[in-house]
Length: 232
Image (tube, rainbow, N blue to C red; front, side, top):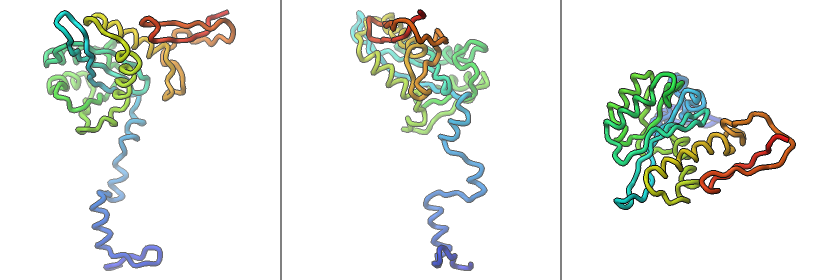
């Protein structure tokens, strides 16, 4: 084998093979066994993973148009969404209080989670990450410009904007909170999810009724609709 390596009846230079492996960053076999892909990591730890992100909403106030920042957490396996906070100024003290609330034992938004995915937004400060870590939850800062690595959170932002916020005019913070509250309730109990087998995440009535009339339930003046069959 010195200098050449026979492959499919041809002679391939060992040096050329080594250069090819180094260029493509293909690790040796022992190292490949100790590594995993991001998709495999998500599938393996989905029950312990949560994602978090910000999105903005434009709200009409007496001072004019104001940008509000909304911070939320989403549990990857159950798709449970918690609106962590809404503010005009997401400064460090506000973020620290959000971290304390989220890691509160037994009732925090990050209960039963062990990892928290977030991007490199400067609002996720070192103190925020430290408080989250003190609650036995490991914050994982994702690489820059990689929204697909936090795809569940990014998809929820798209859903809430396309299905709700982009279709209403918000007057004051109270209307924003009401719209988000109604949509989260609709998302959890009234909206089918294709990624979960086209089921309701947290249905109120777990019994299936095959008889009875089909009724329509509305939220936000008919913007959000849910059809269900009442018991006969």
